[in-house]
Amino acid sequence: MSRRARLVVALACAVGLAIAAIALATNGSGPHRRTVSTSRSPSSGAGSDAAGVMSGSDAKFAFLSTHGTSSCGMNARTAFALARGSRLQGSCCYPMDRRAYQAQVQALKAYAGVRQIPSDPYDIPIALVRELLRYEKTISLSPAEQRTFRQGMQMSREHGPCCCHCWRWDAFTGLSKYLITKKGWHPRELAYLIGVIDGCGGPQPPPGPRPQPT
Image (cartoon, rainbow, N blue to C red; front, side, top):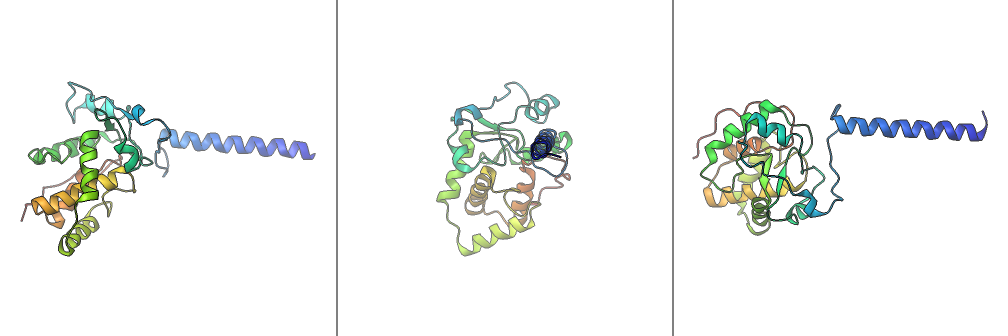
């Protein structure tokens, strides 16, 4: 085979591999996480609030699972820069699971009295995201409170505020700091909530009963 022919074959193989990789990332099959590019301008991340559609409903699931504006590649700075009236919607890493989503929304109803806790883990207003990100920067924990935070994260399903260090990681760290310092939460409560507001997508075990406050 001539040198030119070998180059043509190598190029064809490279193109084939690239197409396969794109297909895997698009359909969510295999172990690859779904990552959405964040090279778009901040204003283009503005999601619809799906007015009139109840969180946890089949209609809301259908909307959020196909209108995602969030990704595991979006950091806190990018999220903070989004327009105030916009929303971060959909899953970060894996396709949403209907049963898991509905169970999470149902469990979050118990926290309706705490404004800082999102009522829908897959549809969060930027105004709230910004508030939680400010908590992460401005709230300091005492040594005892730091132990509470560490223990809660270790007990959580992801062993941290999120499965990856994206905007959710920093926002939910801020939320945790607020709940520890202002509400006196203990590690088990914190770990439970972190699981309930998990926005990575994919099937998840049922939340179970909410731990009682101490």
